[in-house]
Length: 169
Image (tube, rainbow, N blue to C red; front, side, top):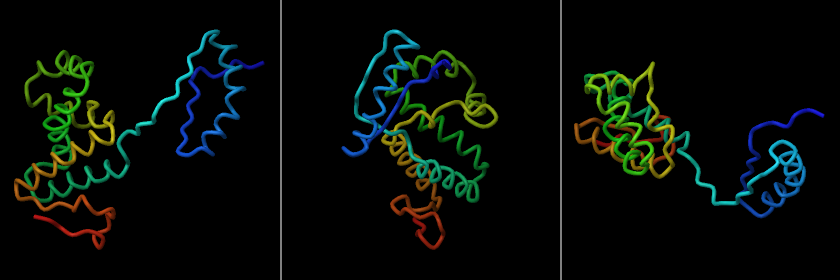
């Protein structure tokens, strides 16, 4: 017999039918888990998705649009927004993140903080956000860039094709 995988069984369902399908796989999963771990924990909870791919695409698009109108590169704007808008949101919502940030990043000079937010370092900020946090982050980016007079893709429209959005001052 092969050794069972060490990763947990996770199944998400958005309707009763999907939930029942996951339930049919559960007996085999439980047997395998007991063989491997001896004691297991079963949790059923509401699924709260992380940020969406569309949110990531919009942030990237705005940073490119800002770079075309401002004095920094898209990557520099990405780092700036992560530091100025993303970090405060995560520090407010997570004591663990705040403690790590204050221990590792806060003591550094401002320019080094900005560099840490950008590639190649890419300090984790937005990748750990929930959809709600990322929406708040994008709202802050929108206010900042449009407050500087930049024209950005309208965030209320779904498309990213130039024919599918209007520019807003």
